[in-house]
Length: 330
Image (tube, rainbow, N blue to C red):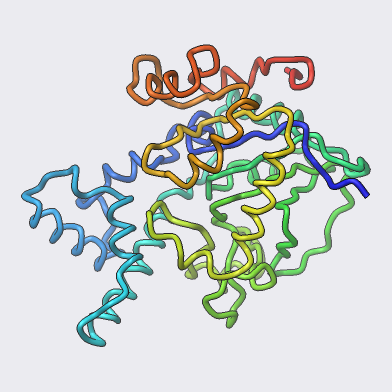
């Protein structure tokens, strides 16, 4: 039996979501909140950042969300039980701060929603097809795509397939769908939660999906969703089957795709693991579309990496006119 492969794969980064929802923060936007705009509900985290900023004489370059997450999440040795408990509070508040900041509620403007709807229609796979044509690989935790599929009447007959059997905490009856959008979220989702009492191992069978409005939402509302934060220290999130299976599948599908499109993913220099993971497929990457505008240093860096013909900016404009007969639908 032939294994399922996808003809085209779209790799989605934060610039994809921000192109449709400008108020949705990226990594750089989170940095502007440190330390003064951290909400008071994260008092331990706020105090920690203010202390660190004073130690560095207020030099902003030393206090950014990636280095902050790395420092907090990688710490293993504590001089006392009090310090260990304090660090647990810091870790909890850091993850809650990131999750609450990246969750933006509200409708898109009409033009942006129209482009997103047409894109999702374009990438939908027929449920009765032996193999899907299109796969979305997302590095984003936000639920922009899920929200659009849930609220728009044009997707009444369309379900979402995360590449894994992640059941609803309410065990809803699945609707009979004629189509599905295949969306693998490589860094997790703000709608995925560890089942109560499942421990620290993020295994596939221990994860459930909880959406706002679900009966179970009040039970999980104050829990930390399952996502890999922006940090160099990610080992603790890989202790289990969830992310290991997701990334193994992603590697297989990328290796067998005919066309790869990178939308809103800027190939950051600090993310060496992702660079190696993605750049080995360079010859099949057809376009790299980023949020940054012309003359931005990141755009110039990507032009040197891929060539000017492949790199462009503004996901909305690009998705209105996807190149090639196999992908054009707008």
